[in-house]
Image (cartoon, rainbow, N blue to C red; front, side):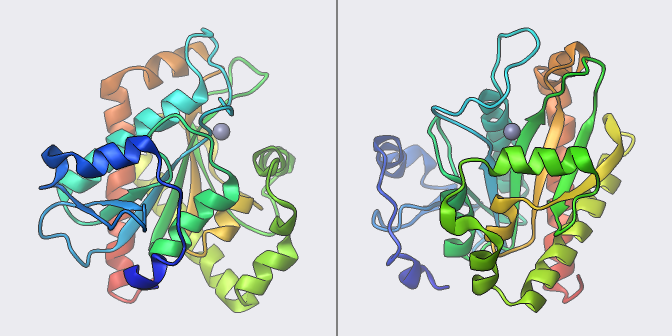
Length: 274
Ligand SMILES: [Zn+2]
C-alpha cells in the first residue's frame, strides 16, 4: 500500500503525537507523515526505502497486563520501555525503518495494532510482552509464532488469554477472507523462520525457556498480514527475572539480540530468501 493510499485510513491523532510531529529536535531522525496519516515512521537519514518493522508494546492504558512480583511495575511499562529501546537501537543502526503501535500509555485494540502493520505495508511485526506464571520459579524468554495448532496446552491457553477482547469479526473465517490459505501459510512459515532466527541470536546471551520457540493461534499475529511474532522477554512473576528486566544492561542485551534478528530477517527477505 502506498503512503498516499494509507492516508485514506485515518487514525485519530492524539495530542502527544501532534506534539511529537511538531518537535523540530526529532526532525533529523524521523520522517513525519502528514498529520492525516498519523503513523509516525522512525528512520535514520538515508534509510528511506528500507524495510519497515512495526514494534508493538503489549498492553497499555486501561490494560496494564501482568503485575511484577514486587508489585512495583506493570507489564505495560516493561513493554513500552523495551519497544522504545529497540526502536532507538534499530534507528541508530540504520538498516530498517520503525513504526510503533504505541509510544505512550494508551489502550489500543488488537485489531488496531495489527492494522498498523497492514496500513504501512510492514515487512515484520514484533509484539513485545513479559511472561507471568503461577509457578514463581518459571523463568526465561520465549518467542511465539503464529500457527493453527498450539505447541502445547499452555501455549493454547496463553493465546486464548491474549486474544480476549478481540472484536467479533476477529475469528478465523474473517482473517482467512483477508488472506488466502496459501498467503497465510507463507505468513506462518516466515514467522516461524524469524522466531528460529531470534532464538539463535538470543542463545547464550540471556536465559531462554527450555523450549523457547512456541506456536499458537494469536489474533494479533494473524491479522498483521506480515510475518509476526510475539516475544516474551522473561517472567515478571519471578524475582530474578524481574530484577534482570529492570536492569538497563540486561535489557540492552535482549534488545540487541532482537535488533540483530530483525536485521538478518529483513536482509534475507530482501535477497529473496525466506
Ligand atoms: Zn502480555
